[in-house]
Image (cartoon, rainbow, N blue to C red; front, side):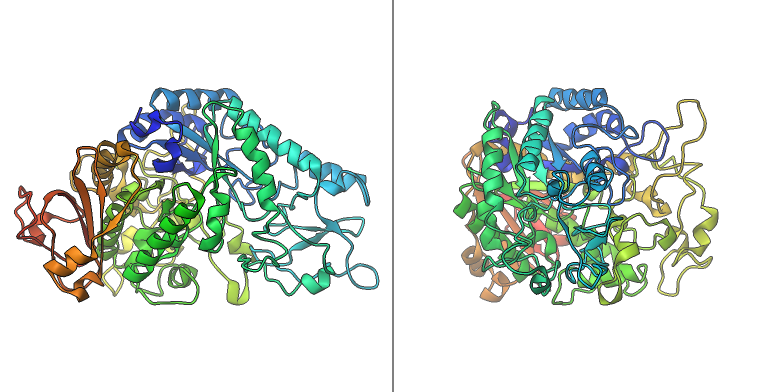
Length: 623
């Protein structure tokens, strides 16, 4: 067990590894990752040095939204395993000293959920329909939806049923929104929280935590139609759909359930809200923690990242909890690719990356060497901060976004329903099954020549065309899938793997001392030994020291901070965003995102006095 996990409030400074189960490890050869695959790789996670794993949904689902269309909240999808498999996975995690967090999806169920099927059969005015949000349509015969809301995935947010009523679905039509004004919904979710807690779960990640509570009664629905479902901020309290004050009544109920256990359970809120509202969700009387997505939204920009850090720390102060640091998850393009693209300020976060994806990775050059350099620097900058750090699977391998998956092989509903100026390719590029073994490289898929960027010749801009091709999945899957139990070849992975995955396989990186994987190993080891044991979540900015060693201009292009360590010293983290090398404060260099020889030191040097840190690099010092 890590030193951090010896505390009841372990989650406050935890390193949490997000597992997207369907893409993590497939042990039965069906092309889908499974619960047994997580158990099998528990030693990998223990060795990496994480405190906890968070599992994205593994419940029965038709996968209209990657498992977030839940048919049964208290069971395991039979394609992913059984409840016995889940219990075995939890037991293996706890033996390894790793906590377990599971995803819970309370804003909506699947349309195949027993409740919704009952609602369809029961008809207008029934108690079954009161569990969801059904309304009459507009028009002479109710043929028009109740208002003009668009689903977040694109298309109308209302779907008509056979008897003429309409139900609300803020996401896919297969995800009807639950009615949280119904006491039965409250009681059923408290039952779900207890069910998974009784099965050893240590905490929860709450999907669309700022949704759930809605006000569709104070004004006519048609009048409320001017609100966009994409506008999820609610600074004045009048947004009818998101971040409403009533949602906190729900979480205060949940806190009573969490406190029934010893130690109490916790939850982290996925809430895309104004930073000043984050403290409410993270209150000790409610969930305990909220994602600080400002960090995940940021491009490689010093001022934006500095602001994100400052706002995250301020939110933690207001809540009495700690903040979270997130660069990647299953919903955003991978940071190594975001940082590899042109860094242009836009009105909407990740707009450049989304435009690049929409054009299959051909709109801009992806400078992978630069993206890797910046991702390494960002990792150290993030992992030294006080609070909890969330790592998305493959981030520790330095994976890039798979931009050129053919459109007919995509799974994300965004790719099918988003349209016009809101068109996006979706999130599948960060959900491709992980590469574990380089030797298990597949042959090129027959269809791969049709993939964008997969011409037979090297591209004019110097990209190796063969790396843009995909494997067939039948002759190999980079160790993602085992053969079937009858000895026949495994099915193709549910999303195609590009051939460049070979260079990022976990076994290859494990053997390379300079790999991204080993950088994460070293950073997490230092964090566990020197930072989290103190229980101290203070941070001191080092602007004056950087100015003294250089100039005020240098400080304005640097993020530098210090934190107290368990042995009475300070850990100093310095990240240089500027185009000029900077002198470092005095101290012993313990970790760097780059080869130190390129910064003016010999590889075995350990003092910073003569070192100048170049652009896009981070160094950790002990002083």
